[in-house]
Length: 371
Image 1: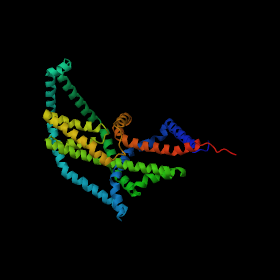
Image 2: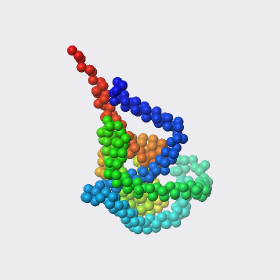
Image 3: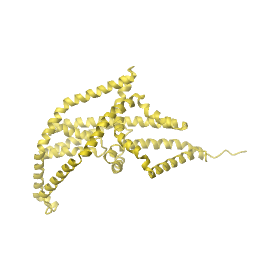
């Protein structure tokens, strides 16, 4: 019993929990490590995402006899060229739409006020709600006060803003260096080999198998999510342009970005488009809803199954539970990282059970009877 692998594994897990508990009791010792982790987390996260985008191209060029450092530099130059192309093509359109949006905001607020007043005077709405206590002027004053306080708070928090901008600048500087070394160190084997060196000899095969599976699934998720979001944004822009919706590019890009958020993203992304459609006319709002429904159906029934595959498919109930728990623990960033984190934990648990299962079978065998 004392020499069995199952017993040693259990003792190792208990020791790990004991170390974690002791670490919480002397947290001041680990504070510098925590600060360093917080400072570098975003840089490593963005570099990891870019790694999965660029590694197929680097591996392809390296397989065609291009030295790996040169292949990485070529990919970097292609990224810079693509960003410049987007800046000079989409930039002017975005600038024009943002200018029109800034000019039309006061008019939009007045239209919303008018809609609220019309609802207040509607007999049907009055039958549903008791509006005696509803004062539109008070609501507008409260909204104006909230905006004023927000502006004042921003003015007071200049030092914080400077700190954030400094951190953002440092992150932008660090990311290319991290990405270069992640791509240079033998591609996808960098992290697995690093962890394998720290693993005991008897566990190396299992660790290698688990890390390889994680690397493959994370690559599938990141690359697939990017393609899905891009398709959703393009389809939304085409649909909004067909129905003549104002600020079609801005609204489509907002839908593209929010589609990163599992489950809630499509609903959050559709709100500005629906509001802009409502300010134009009820018919436009209806057409916006039709476009969004068509785009989301194409995404869920055609694009995602083809791009993401069945291996990353999760039930809606699982996604809802993950979003609720991750949102409670980590906010927006936790929601975004919920599915890949769950996938990694699922792989770890599966490999642990695969490792323990033969041990249980061997320990459950009855000894051979002696003659």
